[in-house]
Structures are given as C-alpha cells and as structure tokens.
Image (cartoon, rainbow, N blue to C red; front, side):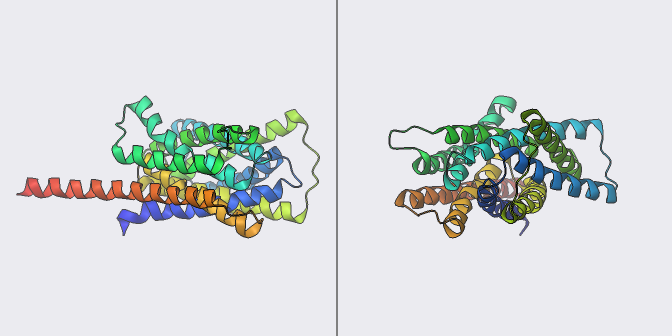
Length: 297
C-alpha cells in the first residue's frame, strides 16, 4: 500500500484544486484577484499558525528561508493564475496551469543535473500535448489570460520542485505555515499598493473564499507537502496535473461549460500521462528488486 500512497494522496490534492478553479470563477464575480488571494491566504495563515503553536513546532533560519522561497513562488503562481482567469475560461486556466508538468524535470536537470528519463519526457510530452489541444486557438495563439496562466505554470513548477527538495530536510508544518504567511503578506501588500480596499462581496464569494482558504490552500498544500515525501518531483507534477481534468469536469457540472471533442481528447492525454508516470514508478521498483535478487544470488 505504501508504494501508492504518494500518488493517491496527490490525486486527492488534484481533485481539491480542480474544484478550486470553479470557486475562483465564482469569487471573481464580486472580488478582485488580490482580494481573493488575501482572503484565502489569511485563512490558511491563521489555521497553520494555530497548528504550529499547538504542536510547538520550532522554526529555525533554514526553515524560514525555505518557506520564504516556497511562499514567493506560491504567490506568483496564484496571482497570475487568478488574474488570468478573468480573461479565459476555468477549463483553459486549469489545463494551462498543468503545463508545470513539462517544466519540473528540466528544472531538476538545470539545477542539479538530474537525468531526465524516458518516462518523464514521455509523460511530460503527453501532458503538454493534451494542454495544447485544449487551450490553443486555431491559429496557435494564446490570449492575454492564457499567457498569464503559463507564467503561473512556471511559478508552480518551481514551487513543486523546491517542495520536493525541502520536505526531505524540514518540518512539513513549519514549511506550510511560513509559505502561507509569505503569500498572504505579499497579497495584502499588493492590495494596499493598488488601492483595492473596497469590498463588495456576496454569499457566493464568501463561500468560495472559505473553500479556497480551508481546502484548496491549507489542506491541499499540507497534503502536497506531506505526500511528496513518497515520490519524486516529476511524478508529483504529472499527478498534480490531473487538477486540469477535475477543473474541467467541475466547470462543466457547476458553471455549465460545454464539453467538446477537443476537451475529451485533451483529458485523455492527461490521463495517459499519469499512467506513464506510474509505469515509471513500477519500472523503478522492479529494477531495484531485480538488482537485490542478483546481489543475493
């Protein structure tokens, strides 16, 4: 069971995040992107701070620096994603966000010279192909919102990569508390700078912000940080790219987006990418077993 715990846990995260695209769409009807971010990260910061105090978690300089890095990429990712959602559809926003699956293995290659294996390349290629089919216009161009969402994908790729590095060294609760606090402070500072201090929020916006703060931010990022201990960054990115599939599904069910053949094809390719990532894990496990058996022989 343990060999699948990482994938299963990250799949739960993908489902929560998929619903988050719809919650963002609803909240944007009465709130600005930075107001939404400030609300969700304030909720997450309060919850994580209480948990850290109750659990008496010690935070050193190294944890503080690591959390600062994660929080910075988290803020950039969500800021460009939420602003981009104003200019594109939830399904396109979701699938373009999932482009981080292509970027993660190459970040590892550039920074640590980690070899990019055939499974990572194949899974990443299939995922980005599915994203392209769903998101590109007939003339292969991207709109303003889509361009912002691609910047978001790059930021999330770095967040996923560094999360995979830091969870091996530092306390999960400390990392989450710090990154949520950093993201909140940056969001709130942006509100003050831009003068977006006037709130006209309805019940739908309140409910959406609570969902985003409690589940899509606090719970989901805690689970991501926790379960990435059981898998590598590339596989984590591929599994988390399933948020685009769930984002599209919930967009159809809740806000009435219309399913097209292109959407179905794109979703299918994402599913195949995830299966490819799982094939990689199985191949690695079987190879290690074979090596052990040969040594014992």
